[in-house]
Amino acid sequence: MSWKPQPAAVSAPPSEDAVRIRTRSGIAAVLFLPALFVAKVLLLATDKGGRCFVDDIECVPFPATAFGALLVAVVPALVVAMAAPVRVARGALSAQLLLEAAGVLVVLAYP
Image 1 (cartoon, rainbow, N blue to C red):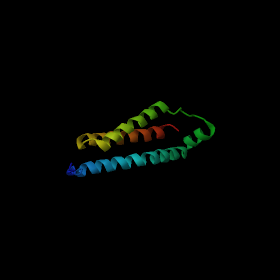
Image 2 (cartoon, helix red, strand yellow):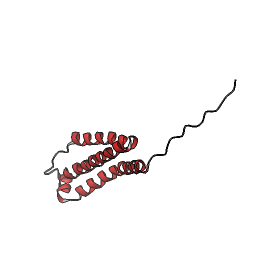
Image 3 (cartoon, rainbow, N blue to C red):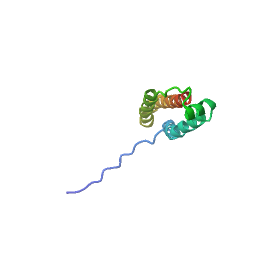
Image 4 (cartoon, helix red, strand yellow):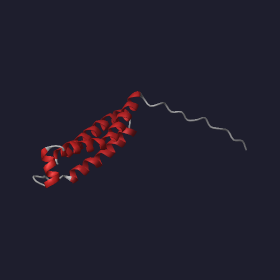
């Protein structure tokens, strides 16, 4: 019995576009939570946000289901942007950025 080592399977390195898309998607995902926090702090710093926080006057209920749906939709967009081919990942990155921007706008719209 002889053991013959198999040659290592070498795959081509990812293209520059794929690396750029993955990097931007990761940065956007990491900065999403701080963006939500900053948006909420800025909103509470306004007159209406402060009154709503302290006195519960003129408060509109926060749309938790819509916000939760946005958060749930960001995850598949992130996964596709990280794992898919470049053409698909480019669209997924756009979707991820739009969903994250919509999430921040929802936080800004409801004190």
